[in-house]
Each structure stands twice: as C-alpha cells, then as structure tokens.
Length: 167
Image (cartoon, rainbow, N blue to C red; front, side, top):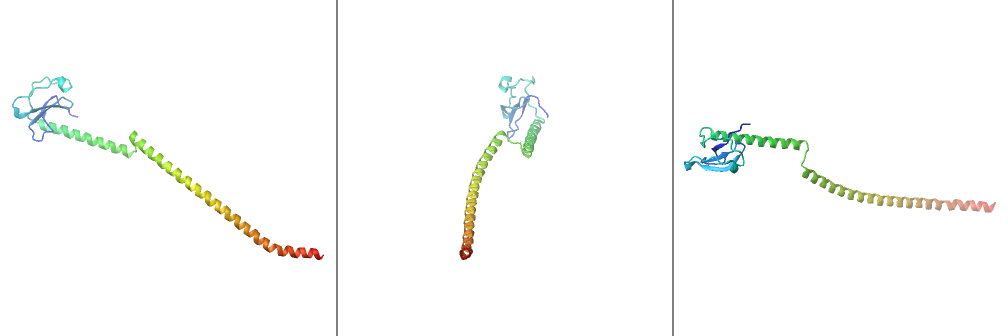
C-alpha cells in the first residue's frame, strides 16, 4: 500500500480540478483550497487536521503527478472495497450470518415450529376421530354378524329343542 506524505494535492472529488485538498498522511481532511486564489495554501495545523504535522515542509503544490497519485489512492480504495465485498460473499457462502440475521431466522423457525405443532394437533384430532368411526363401524359390523348368526341359530335351536321334547 502506498502512503503519501501529508500535503496539498489535487482534490480527487473535485470534478473541474480547480481545488486542492489536504492529505494528512492517512486520510483526506475537510481542508480545501481554490487553485484560482493564486496564493499557496497554508499547511493546516495538527489540531485542525486531527493528526500530527509530519511534513515540516514549506507549503508548495506539487503539480507533477498529484492528480495521478490521487487517482491511484482512489483506485486502491476501490480495490479494497471490492475485496471487502468478496469477503462478505465468502462469509455468505459458508452460511455465516450476523447475530441479527441469526436471531430473525431463529424467530422465523420458532413461528414455523408453532404452526407445524398446531397442524400436528389437528392431524392427531382427525386420526382420533377416524379411529373412533372405524371402531364404531367395526362394532356395528360385529353386531350385525352376531344378529345374522342368531337369526340362523334359532332355527337350529328350535329343532334341537323339539328333538329333546320328543325324546
């Protein structure tokens, strides 16, 4: 990673290229200077940039390569952002989620479990109802079989009774 010394450079955010922005050695500051002013910009104090003044150089504007250097920093930042995006994709690929996403997923699963438990209770009630109907039908069928049998038995019983009386 390339790090530039603290100094004024062409503002990479300025579309028309007429501004300079102060680079404090680690980040762009809020300090800007209009090139059309004609005066060389003063080096911001350490207290106004939030960092130590490490340059101790006279305030001069390097004209050669400053825009290219700023573009290089922007390109490097873009590359780092792409790498961060790629790493997030790897995290997603392996199923790692944030705590909030896991909590939401767990709540959704809890809701799904509750819905499935309710459906299970309904199915169990249907099974019991069906079982009761089958048992009732089986009892009716058995009773009908017994009636038919009994209907055919009195004939035999009567003839046996008659034989016994005759003897």
